[in-house]
Amino acid sequence: MRYISTRGKAPSLSFEEAMLTGLARDGGLYVPETIPQVSTDDIAAMSGQSYEDIAFTVMRPFIGETFTDDEFRNLISKAYADFSHDARAPLVQLDQGHFLLELFHGPTLAFKDFAMQLIGQMFQLALGRKRERVTIVGATSGDTGSAAIEAFRGLDNVDVFILYPHGRVSEVQRRQMTTPAESNVHALAVDGDFDACQARLKDMFNDFEFRDGVRLAGVNSINWGRVLAQIVYFFSAAVSLGAPGRAVSFTVPTGNFGDIFAGYIAKRMGLPIADLVVATNQNDILHRCLSGQGYRKGTVHATISPSMDIQVSSNFERALFDAYDRDGAAVSQLMDELSKGGFDVSQGAMQALQDHYRSGRASEAETSATIADMLTRTGELLCPHSAVGVNVANEMRDPAVPMITLATAHPAKFPDAVEAATGIRPPLPPRMADLYERDERLTRVPNDLEALKTHIKGLIRA
Ligand SMILES: *Cc1c(COP(=O)(O)O)cnc(C)c1O
Image (tube, rainbow, N blue to C red; front, side):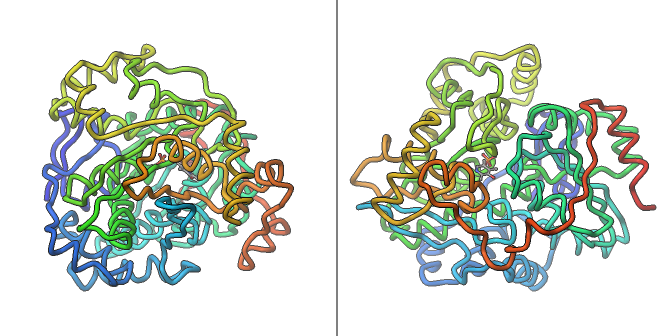
């Protein structure tokens, strides 16, 4: 299995190379050259299997020669051993035909743990046997950073730097990034919003001298390994509700388009998915685009679902690549136009996008009302991101097809918004109950490439 860039100019790579690199050298994102197919019989056989067994079947064709079967099974088993729910990704019923996929039972209480825990294991094995080291720099709107720090803390061959927008993450998110004491992890509070963090990260990757000098690696959702790990729970959830005999739909609270894109890959692999619904908060560039209004940057508004406060969705480039029949030159041109403000999607590509994705948006008031309403009607306490999903799913769903909405974070990660909506302050799970007492360690940094490079070079271990 080879990986090719969405901009058509970088060399193709193996899974191991694509995973350890992150962003392609032509500025593009790596995607698999072909999509492996899972047969109806293979899907049927997943019924009743453990999450780990399903994960092996779904991901194995993508990793090529990078790991042996035994190694890969072992990595998967270690990645999910620390989850606090035996099912890893349990389904809960909300209503007739509407289900919630709880993806928040990992160590940092958000779905990012599914990919990051596995990536941590894969990096450790791949780097250890090559006796190489890397510097991981990541940008986060809150959850990626804590998941990455949790996955890489204390590892010998990685230094980790996480850029997060100062003052724009929740206290729990911040503390999860600033309280680990290991000297190889660093939380950097950037004076800017998430798009600024993401832009500086891209600048570092495009500065080849710096990139090669520190052996830069990326674990943002642009890393194919992240998308890969997220394909699994679309299969496990669909199979629980009767796939392959019955099609299901998914609604995905969306920011950087990584999670929903994993659902699209599951569909392309052969999983019977009826609708894939993109749910956005008031930062709704994706909803506007999928409604035919072009892809145009607006200003980012801070919302109660901060992990979705994004205007430029990195992984949308992967969707565009397929919508433009994998024409790297066309994608390059769109990205050039985007850097000047935005672009229109061609009619053919728009049709292709709308064949695969539907979309909806939830306002702040609707999100809060959904948290309150779900508590009353089901006893389920939703985080604001999951509530955006449930709100949009309720608007869009076809009663004849089971709808699965992804619950992307635990409500205790966003206690202020949940308390404001319901009067109930969700407690942290016991294993992190002392989070508010732990010492914090962070550095304020300007939104400036040179300053960031200097800071990072000064802290990496030889
Ligand atoms: C990251 C995140 C999202 C958005 O996921 P994408 O893959 O970036 O679209 C939604 N909700 C929560 C809680 C998140 O942490």
